[in-house]
Length: 431
Ligand code: HOZ
Image (cartoon, rainbow, N blue to C red; front, side, top):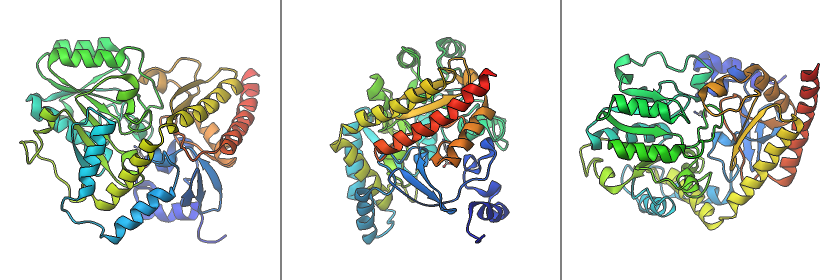
């Protein structure tokens, strides 16, 4: 055995990296096996250092809507590199990005680029507080908005599987202004507003929750949030880090026809590079320094290379509106196959190119029902898929992403493996 395989790299990694990784879900704790160390990726395929080439449905947790190493994006990055890696000064590309954002997502009248989704949501909250002069915010149990202190309360993503959904190291003082409501439950929001009518700066929501697995908003839920925030003079923040440019070019807000006051983006907006953005109504965003009093800054914000990757990606998406139908069609085939092969005994939540399989016979429509699914079964499914060349999300509580690079053959092969797994699974569950 050579030194270069996932197991030996993992052993080495654990010595100097917490859990051997730079982000917890990558450690595969929730699925009980050794994480794959990746060598390279191209299109819909990802290859680990052990030499396994797999069909990738993690897609770097969302950014890879065009697939890996898209030649057009690579070439934009390469030519940007020739001009220097970072200046810490404004560039034309940033202006182009802000203009394109305003065009593709009309609520983004004024925007600010940052380097991650975490930074974007943290900053949007600060702006909401600065604008309204209020301190409290409402978030939803199981929704994840990055790992800033005030938002790491009843959070989703790896916070659901690695420890408790509230992190150690976050002083109570930092979270006492974070109120938690139940996703898809208007009464829980109503009650918080009724108890704090003039104190709530904003409601922040993943319009489609995708960090407790994919959980769709019930009909009218987002509209309800729009109305109640308006009624109480609070802002509505859509965290579109996952849904942005994925559900539609204009994100979930276009898909559901709801105009939030502020929005946050990450993942696709960077085309594979570290970019985030927040923005929204001009009168609100004028609070941001140096126009206003809300401070927020970043050495690598608007980085020329990252912005080039993001801009090219958004331009490709804009030039090809058929992409969303293709994504929908492919993902629907996967979802239908699971329903068929499992004889309807698992829950498949899907919207556009986002999908989750929950091992439960109950509908999954909030945190409680998501958390009630059988995570050991999911881990078993994950390991089977992995060993058959399909790279699925290594946690029940992450989404499955489909990209434009997934071919008809990829989908057919994936369905074949799913059918094999669920064929045995159904049989086992009948005994
Ligand atoms: N919070 C990300 C998934 N929802 C983590 C991604 C990563 O580990 O790269």
